[in-house]
Amino acid sequence: MTLPEIRNHWENWASEFGTDLRATTKTPTIKQLEVDVLQRAIKKTELWASRKNLSVLDIGCGNGYNSFAMSTFLPECHFTGIDYVPAMIDNAKIIQKNNPKYKDVSFFVGDALDLVSNTNLAAGYDVIFTDRCVINLNPLEMQLKSFDQMVAKTNKGGYIMILENSVQTHARQNDLRVAVGLPPRPVMEFNLFIDEPAFIAHAEKSTKLVRIDDFGTLHDILLYVITPMLNNGVVDYDHPVVKAATELCVSLPEKYENQFGTFGQNRLWIFQK
Ligand SMILES: C[S@@+](CC[C@H](N)C(=O)[O-])C[C@H]1O[C@@H](n2cnc3c(N)ncnc32)[C@H](O)[C@@H]1O
Image (cartoon, rainbow, N blue to C red; front, side, top):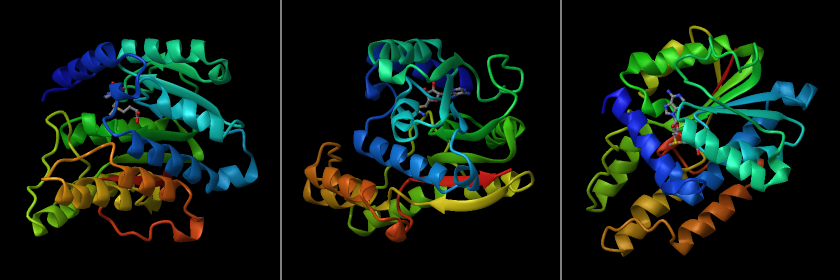
């Protein structure tokens, strides 16, 4: 799909699903894991160790779910969400109006490809993160451009956390499916997954890759391989085993993080400026 068609896709989902989580994902369980790994990652930074009132920018925030959830885990931080679909931002503000506990989160319309001239944004942020936003940009050069915009808006010593789908781990997950007679899962037409060697080589020109989190492996093997094996190939987003695995993963002691392998289609790459 072209960039205008992709934008149109998100405008349609914003108007169809409104304030519901479904406006940005079909998988509520992976959303729980995304929020969990992001808040864990912020708590592991050197900045968090020295002061907790970090400024955090959520790029491609949709209707605000991540910033709302993370603001409850990290009440010391200030969260700002931007999305290029005005209806997504309107819906985030509706959720906020109905939930006074989220009143301190800020929302603005903004494009990941042009952060620098967005006058609503601060000069720099301690942490900038994306969650399945960069995969909506194509070709690769646009993804790299958005990364450079994030670098420009990150304070020195700050972090850029990229939680996105990987070409390489998605392929590994499909290898497991094929091994048990399931067809590979295709990439949605509006996504270009992150090609890790090219993306990381570019990112490391201006930042340092400090960590990769494979938080979704157990969840994704159960959701996309094991339960479909028992279920005529059907992916069941509500399967109790997937929910139980999610509960286990959000409760996982830190010493056991990253122990399930690299078969989750989403990874979290953490870069420091
Ligand atoms: C898969 S949804 C994820 C939403 C949110 N990050 C989450 O994890 O729940 C992708 C979001 O990225 C937004 N988006 C895509 N391209 C963007 C761009 N160039 N600038 C800002 N937002 C963008 C879409 O409007 C959509 O809300």
